[in-house]
Structures are given as C-alpha cells and as structure tokens.
Image (cartoon, rainbow, N blue to C red; front, side):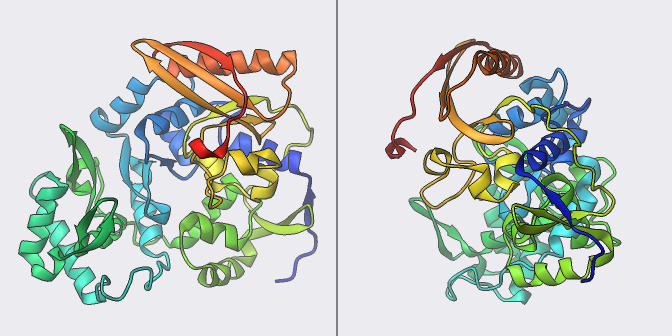
Length: 388
C-alpha cells in the first residue's frame, strides 16, 4: 500500500476518540444505536450486558434492556465474534450474519476425534433450521432433534464442557447462528432456549447476500481503531493471515494511523480525532464490556498494576469489572446486591483527586439507576490475584 501521509496520534487522543465512538462520553438516545455503536454487546453475563447498554443510552434501566430484547425484539441475543454470546440490534442482524458467516473460522480448532466434516456441518445447520422453524426448543430438546435428523454421530458425547460432555453437533451452534437459523429465545425456567430468527426477529429473512466480512472489519475499526489487522483477527477469533490479506485489499477505504510508533488503521469514512485533550472522565465498566475487550494495545490500556490485577492470568480482558480514568484502566470494582441495595467497592490503582471522587460518585449513582437499586460506595484496596 502507498499512502501520502500517516496520522500520528498520542494515546490520550486515541482514548478520547474511542470513548466517543463507544458512547461513553455522550450517551445515545436508543438501545439499538448503542448496540450498533460497538458492533454488538457482550452478553456472556446478561446483567453485565444490561449495564454496558445502560451506560451508553440516556435514561435506560435493566428493565428497558429486557423489554427491548424479549418484548419489542429490537435487540437479538445470538452468537458473535469468537463464538461468544452478544446482543445485537435486530435491524443489523442480516449484515451481522452475512459478515460472520464469511469469516475464516479455524478448521483445526478441535481435536481430530471431535471435528465434523463440511458435509456433516451442513447437515447439522439444516437440521437446526428445520427443528427451530417449527417451535422454540431447549438445548436438550434441540440435541434430540438434531440427532434424529442427522444420525447418532451428531449425538456422540465428545466435547469436554466443565464437568460433563456435550454432543458433537454443538460445535456448529455458533455457525448455525451466523447462517441465520438460530438465536436465543426467552429462557424456559432455568433452561436455555433457542428460536429461529425468521420467526423471532421482525422482518428478518436471512443474511444479507450483498455483505461480506469487510463491513464488520470497517465497523470494528470505526469503534476500536486505530487498530492493526492482527487486532481485528483477535477480536473476531480467527487466524490472522486471512484478515491481513483482507485489510490489505481495503487500501482505498483505510487511512494509516500511528500510535506510539505502531501503525494501525482507521476507516477513511471516519477519521475524526478530537482536536483537544479534554478530560474524558471516570467510568465504571462491567464484565466483558466491549471497550476493554476490543481495544488495543493491551500494554497501553492496562498499564502497570492494571495488567496484573485487571487481566486474567492468561492476559484475557473483561474478566474483571474495571475503573477507567481518561479511557485507561486504573482500577477494578465489584458489587454485592441485597434486596434493593447495591454495595459497590472500587479498588483504584492510582490516587483519586477530589474531582475524580466526585465523578466516581456520579458513576455509582448511574449504576444504581441502571440496576434499579440504591447504591453505596466503598473505596477499597487492591487484593491479590488469587481471588480472580
């Protein structure tokens, strides 16, 4: 690629840009806009997803998120990048499915005795399509339906899962979602339940045939950039070489941006960077918030003690709720709920000025409003990794 100029940014500018794109400095008016702003909200922990959306949307509570998801169906719970559970705007589902189904998912991620052939995978997706096209099913019911429509091989208990084993076919459950034949429905008691997007999502008729993975890559760079092709691959959960090739082919739609000597990319359609270095403020982000999961480099986002205390032992981000100061991780926090009381303890890694403390008080009040509880704040000291 040949470029006339490279944008050179400092870390504070990068944080300011990302915080704005993530609606963390200026909340949006609607939940679907908030979900779209970050290319889907992580929903491994639903209560955390409710907070992630609430922080980005003006005047929203967890009840509003649940109504948008299960009553108005403006949000959809489905599988996304890395095969993890996300909430995505219903209107974006056709593009989301088309982009993810075009991703270069690794073919050798499973041991040989576990893998399915391409033919078997297609049979499973067709079986899921047929089964959920009739009615909603719990995961156990879907197990039986898929095996009945394919063969005993699909039900062989070969996938290790915590203290049990899952049937072979379940390795394709994320792919079935990406192909637009599966998403989450309301739980049936404590049982996970799946439904068909054609029945569940108003107006959905399948993946958008005119969309490829490039659309999702550009959306990622808009919200999380500047970023390298390897950062994009890590966020998607796919091998880096094909993503590097894809990014190289987008040369007419990208602008290079260098941060502390490392060159990344921004989409040409959105290269705006804040001209000033105004204080972005203090934020409390929940488990698996998109900002900490998708932003890089980790060494800048999690400096010093943050790398030790806020990342997992393997370097995974999102396993701890974090305190942000000016867009950089500067502490961790946790909560304890008792009836309508929400007890929040924040463990900062740096001294907090009186101004920062006032901002933190405001954040705690905001969390209380989102979670429909009366909050109290305790400033604690950082504890050892052993309890992570």
